[in-house]
Image 1 (spheres, chains in turn orange, cyan):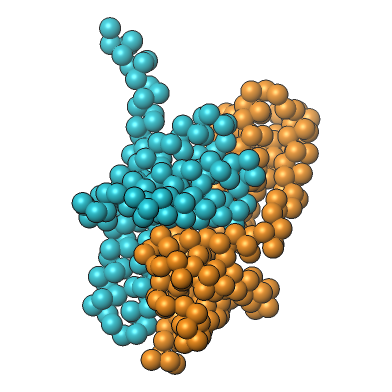
Image 2: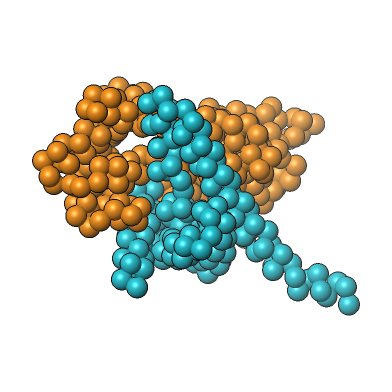
Length: 254
Length: 149
């Protein structure tokens, strides 16, 4: 018979591990790292025989036979490296025995509610600037730098606005790449830009699921077959949306 | 020479800017930019003489190794540095081109580019895993040598 107090302590540890896993997964942490972090945290807090199974859309976590396994559904995923790094720091401190269960819980809640460290305007500027830089990196000339900055910035703004309007990510990406294509054609037509393709490729880079493609292959190689396939499917859908948006512009004007 | 300076500068800015988009911690932005620049320069230099796939592989291994070093040096997860570092290498443009060709009914070109994009993604994944394995081997090397003697 397990004493009452022990069980509540155990369920609090489980809650902390789940919260940490949830924040990491929602912020773009790799699935195997989320599994690893949760297991390490549980072990450091006195539950050495935990199992965690993480897929991009959910977390399963069980500690032993007496406590029922827990499940968390993840529906919204972004990339927020700051949160991944903060949760990592908390897990490290738990491992070194610096944090009590209560302190860890408070810290994690604080991290979960933490606003983005950059304002929307700064992110927009960054996206615009990187679009211009990518155009140069992919062999474009400096006279296409500014057109790419304009297209990339407006395209990034469009994907955010459209996503708020329709809530379907696929459609938001399609519309945004349509806007980018349209702008690129327009800028080349009025003589502001020279190489349409280079401008478009640079401008869609902030939207392209490059990280997802690579993570998908990496998950597959590490044996996380479900994660790999679902990330691959997500990446494929995004690439398809971007390609379609641009293709509509091409079929309209050529 | 001017070409390389230009490429170094733009890849640095692009990688650091991606750090902002991905909400990387403020004090790690320059590090991310640096990793991205090293990776891209290696890629650009190697692409002159070799194919894109080995060039990407070599660049990713470099990015992985530097990211692992930075991770231990600055006590932050590897992903913060490796993400910014591999973004320039990721075949996003190729994936986009492939998709555009699919939609425009140019299937043979589309399949060719999609296969190439897959190969490059594979090269990046292999490079990252290899650098991780290298890192583990180096860390275990002293212990392994001692155990033998």
